[in-house]
Image (cartoon, rainbow, N blue to C red; front, side, top):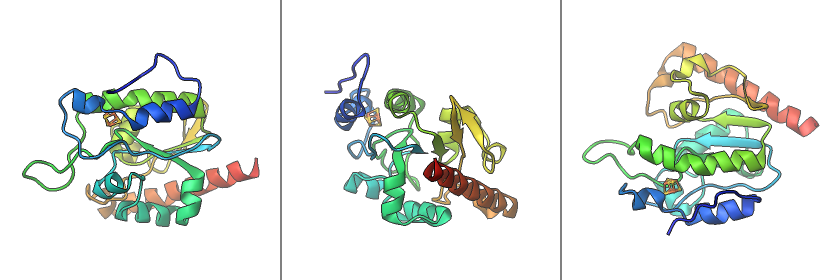
Length: 203
Ligand code: SF4
């Protein structure tokens, strides 16, 4: 049974309730994993993805599949450094399963996205990261209200005092990176993320 308090004082208690969350199932949405996220108190960079895939759902760890490998390559980070650097969460945190009768994973419905926003809002309130990296169009839309990737990838934006540097989704499913101009935006964005991380190290 999902438990949501009216307020949280620590990330640990928030994470404990989030790990047991079944709100979408209770709302009638099919899910194929338990919640997936990873992070700890004191991390100053927040990676905000779309939703876990099948591999992440099985391992209960974010960014374990090929998309995660690509993301780390873009940022020039090894696995240990990546997980030590970023608190990793996503718009929805349970593997949504495949599109019925179609290709790829199901996009979480607006109701699922709204249900899961509770966890993100409390995480950001408690963690207060200096850098937020939304990954993919849905994450940029949910955090910033920006609907088109080329309007934000390659830019350093701000959100409640944190720097925000959006990236495209590394799965390549959208084809956004097929355009050369967009690949240049990605290069700029990856450079910005690395600069922001270097700035955090130097503080
Ligand atoms: S996707 Fe989010 S709100 Fe839905 S059951 Fe999983 S953790 Fe809970």
